[in-house]
Length: 127
Ligand code: FES
Image 1 (cartoon, protein in one colour):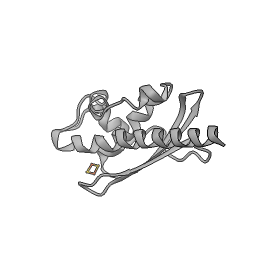
Image 2 (cartoon, protein in one colour):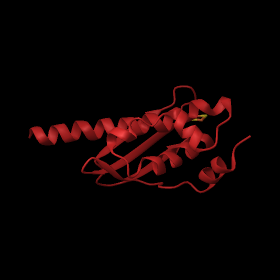
Image 3 (cartoon, helix red, strand yellow):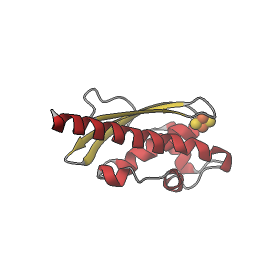
Image 4 (tube, protein in one colour):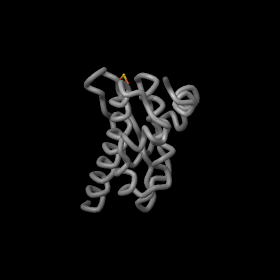
């Protein structure tokens, strides 16, 4: 049912944790199941240099959270916010159709963290 890559990221998730001095934080919930993901980003000169996440959710949610951190580190915030849940699923060599909604959580949490980073950066430059 799940690809080997999904199982790998589920059993050995990358970049789990928190960043104390994060530049952006995103927290989203999946309305369909109640699962929650929180994600922290560090940004240096518009490039995402570090990401950590905590996901209270199903195996597909944990695997997509893990793989999106690998996809986004090293990208500019503009590139990273364009990562779609479809791309996340493709990176994992596919998800079962009933689990596709789980991949929304990762893409939405990353987008929320980038939005938070932009708001903070705008507030800093205004002060
Ligand atoms: Fe909730 Fe997968 S069942 S995110």
